[in-house]
Length: 324
Image 1: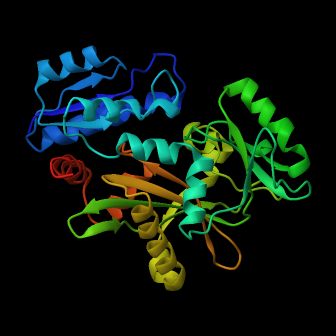
Image 2 (image 1 turned 90 degrees about the vertical axis):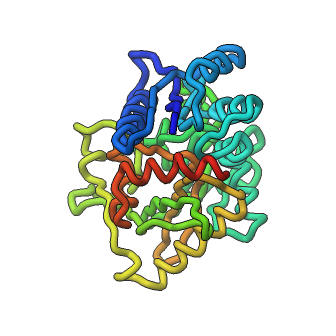
Image 3 (image 1 turned 180 degrees about the vertical axis):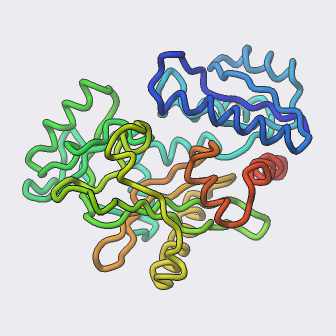
C-alpha cells in the first residue's frame, strides 16, 4: 500500500508530549516500510487546500493519522479526520465525532453516566454545581490529554478547587474541571477493532513502587509520563497479569471496556483509563481514541503481551482503515 503518515506540525521547542507525535510518526513509518509498504511522513496543517495538495502529490491508499494536536492543543485534533473525511480519503483510527465526544471530558462523562458506566462524580465552572467542600477532587484539563497540568497539587479539597482551576487556566489556558478523586489502582486498557468486534488487549496496571511516599497522591502525572529523570517516572511501572491473578476484576475491566467502545461507537484503536477502588469497582476516567502508538507506549506494550509484534500491529491498523 501507499500510506501517508500524517502527524502534528510540532515546533522544535515544543513540550515532550507534543514532540512524541514525531517519534510515533517515525516508528509507524518504519514499521510500515518493514512490511513492504510505502510510508512517507508529512506534517498536517489545518488548511484544506494544503491538505488536498499533499494528498494529490502522494496519492495514498490510506492516511495513517497520528495528529495529536493542532495549534499546540489537543482540542483541535478532530480537524485532521474532519478534513480527511471531507476529501474522501480513508484514514486510520477515530473520526472527528469520536475526538469531539471524548476530548471534552465532562461531556464524555455525561455519555458514560447516561450509558450506565460507572464514572466518578465531577463539577465544572463557573458555578461548580455539586461540589462538596470537604471531599477530595483531582483538577484536570477538560479538553487536553497527556496528563497536562497533573502533579501532586492537582488533588485538593472541594473548597480549594476553584483556586486550583484558576491557577491551571492561567498557566495552561483552556477549560478545567474537578473529578472526584478515587484513591485506588490505575489501569490503562488498550482496545482495537477487529472483524469480530472490539479486542481488549492484556490488561495493564500502573503500579506505584514501595518507595512511594506516604501522603503523595498515586497519580500518573505529567512527570510520570514524560520526564524520565523524575521520581514519578521511575516510581510508576506498567504491569500485566490481572486476568489470571484477579479473574473477576479482569472480567469487569474487559466487559466495561467493550461497553465503552460500543457506547461511543469507536473504531480503529483506543485506550480506556480506570481507577479501581478498594471494593474492586472499576471507575472509568476517560477515553483516548488514537492513543499514543509509539514503540514505548502502553498500546504497543499491550500488543506485545498479546503476541503481536509492533510492525504487525501497525500493519493491522493501516489495513483496517480500508474497510472502516
